Image (cartoon, rainbow, N blue to C red; front, top):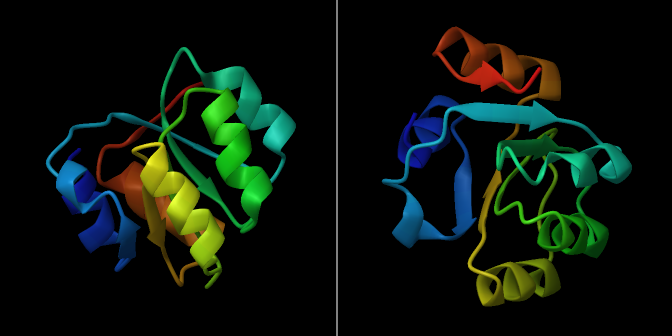
Length: 114
């Protein structure tokens, strides 16, 4: 699924990484526990989280993950956006709950990692 499709499906605002919206990604992972996210580097999934702080950006940097969707009306700070831009990440903001966002992505064909 193209990142542009994810953005449209979730009615998400793209905060950075607009130049990457034609990239295809087929897996996603949802968690607010950054320790769980650290184990996913080999898969490079789209990360859905309600954790909106610098820890999210830094954890994804360490785990070589670069697509973040913030759910539950969470907003990225300017500091988060600046760091994400420096790292070439895509950050989106979505008003939906994590459950609804995951359900919509799964229904549209996005695959879980496990």
